[in-house]
Length: 486
Ligand SMILES: *[C@@H]1O[C@H](CO)[C@@H](O)[C@H](O)[C@H]1NC(C)=O
Ligand SMILES: *[C@@H]1O[C@H](CO)[C@@H](O)[C@H](O)[C@H]1NC(C)=O
Image (tube, protein in one colour):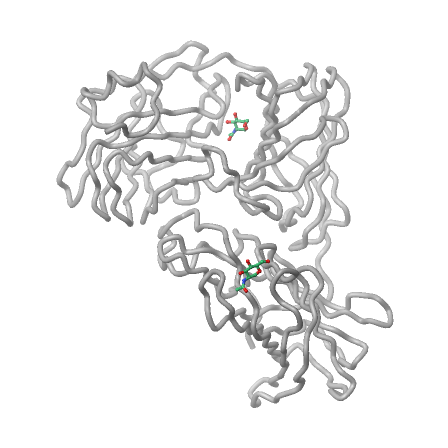
């Protein structure tokens, strides 16, 4: 049986060891700290759920102390935990894995090559698997060799970041400007490591990257550059890969990169790192850690979404949706106002929904639920618009009034993002921790006569979002945390 495509020179290893390992350091250069590790391997035997895969390296110690590293650990397999124990990475699987399955792992910032010299070699990785303490596969000898690449000087002469009125928790467009002391050429790709205060997909993710690395959840994000050419950007765990550079940028010339719909984190000091690789994927230009400052403003008139729930959470099914939220301010709502509910991009209203039956009710703190409006909502792209009819009268809401909006007969998405941590976060029916993931629902209150938003939710401050539980093909909501519950 042919496990998966292997470079011919590795095939002979197959009888000697029980795993075949491909690995890549990003970047593989002397003098670099925070080096990522990408690994792909298959094991010659099947693993039951709950097996432990132990990855050891002889040549360097990991940057992380013993303990939990699940925030730095990404894999194509569902795993229950990812830790370092006595310098060995231990991944406990949550599902069984057939023999020869190609497994990929990506570890963020795992190594430090600052004291390595170019050309240094050492023994690389070995993989052992076991179940309940019984060894399943074991590499008899560790035959792969690691070689450290050339050292590359910091050649960014300038960089800057700008954003349009960045508000914490809000989406905005980010602009990077750079100049380097070496040329940037067609075919180069630019890798930007983002501060972990951002969400791991940096901006609003579009479709999944269909390349070899889609098992690490790389998404396309919307970016453009009038200087680099017709670029594409993929993002995954706090870095952005800019490919498709078609222009030559001469040394010392400014070049620009816009990234659209970035969720602005709550930080005034953001650290970035920039790498430029040539078309052979060798590092040619790098920056040191860049400390860039943006001035954030705090949101005014926030809407706190308490929960988003639904009657049926299977992909493609039709479901009723229930939104509970509070206005964080006082407002008398009349027929001059509408609620705008923005659904994540996976929803496709234009092709499936015509008019949407909808109701609203409210509940004062400690009071009972009072029915308020029964209406037909309309949609505009992914906004469901709930106009307050004149027969609803006027009602004064304060920060303690809970509003519930119900929308009936919405077609569920056909796809959703996959939980990148598998069951590492515990309950596999819900995925991830709240603030990491995007694709949020947003609610706005719009004043029609002024054409103005009177209040709105902010993506990073709540978490009514769409996710997918890979195992049961059900899509799931994580209920908000960190919002006000009175
Ligand atoms: C960035 O994209 C290039 C071109 O597709 C690819 O060769 C490289 O491996 C990618 N880098 C990462 C870190 O995924
Ligand atoms: C939604 O619309 C698409 C075509 O636009 C159709 O293929 C699909 O079956 C519809 N789904 C439902 C649940 O009606």
